[in-house]
Length: 579
Image (cartoon, rainbow, N blue to C red; front, side, top):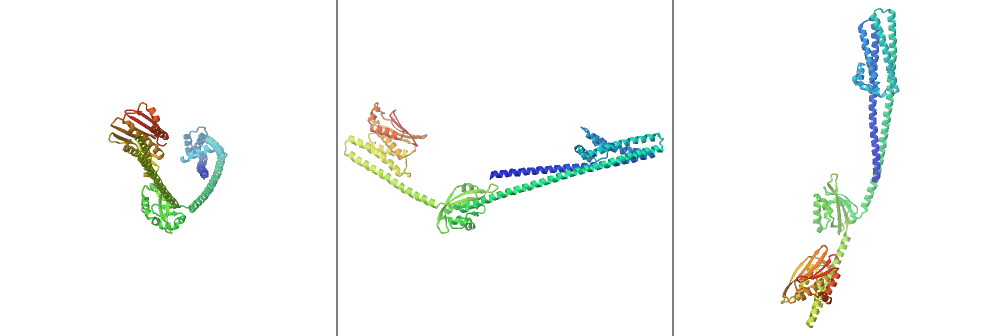
């Protein structure tokens, strides 16, 4: 659609440009026409001055011939000077580089008006080669030649008069010759006037038809432009109609309720008919009732929140407010409540200011029902899982109690072995205790778990003979049961070894437990300031169940185990946090 629109816009632009070009051409043609007509008028006026001067010159020289009065001779020369000025201007224009000052001086002598001289010059230069005007110029030249003969005849008259012996026969001959030239000049003047008239007709006809053709072409272009624009508008109108029809059909058949609310008035501009399927009310009823009627249908528990949102529609933060979807309950015409989700956006006016809210209301009652059922099911499973962890912990406690009873009836060596087993069971039981006390039932806080485990071991091994203190420095870290159990058993074995071997022959000591988390790595360090590892530790650990368990559980964590003697013993395991 955009591509077709672009093509139509280009076509319209070309038509406008062509229309403008022809308009400019028409203006130029009219300007040329006015110049030509003004030039013809100037030549016609000049031709009148020339003819009048020629006649006055003829009469003056004849009177001088008969009267020998000098004033008639002066009048003759004055009139001849008018004709001579026109000749001077014309002959200067024929030059390749005319002197326009000389041209102006000549035509002023020829009694032309100053404002007409530029028109005479323009017309002569532009049209001197065109046949109708060329014929007129030739008659002008012929007239100038005859005026030359008339000047010669006047010179002869002046010579005879000065001689003073003119006979009647000579006077008659001179008079006849002058009148003969006058008749010749009259014919030339007539032909010149006729040629100028024909040239004017020639020009007028061409200018007339050029004007008419230009006007017709402009009208045709205007008509074509109008037809093209009407056709474009018709096609756009059809597309707009079909688009609007499709849009309205989509709105009409949509299960969601789409509405438009005027922010200033608080009135609904439009609500889709699907609202009847949702609430039982028609769109007309809701539009007529307005925002207050819609709020009256809101559930009492949701009403305060909805009113607060509506009051903020006039604020500057309206876009942020409507950007958040809202969920609330609507009362249907039947009296039941339905959960709906309201998605909104702001419609702005031409000045960029919010003018209306466009909203989409969807029935989410079934979804809410599913969520409630799912939540109930999850709670039931959480309770069941909590009960399982609780029972596992209780069962492990029973096993630990049975071992405690067995210890009372066994010798000292067996008693120590059972005590180690008992501590291992307690470390596992402690994990399950933490899990059923936790809301998620999936993860335990490792720092909290180790701290409780340390307290359990401390309670088991603490005696009045030896003062063993504990130092704990642990970062918070959540782990699942799969990782918590082996970590707990590793801590249990390391702490057992500290209490059993690190402080032999020593009355007091310190055990440090550190848990550090950095760059997705966890580092657990258990150290003491006891006697350190024996020299044959590498051989001894092969026979130690505790060390074997530590190495096995470290591999289960995909971790790394290291140990050393440095003013005591330091055991360190490193493992990935997200493994």
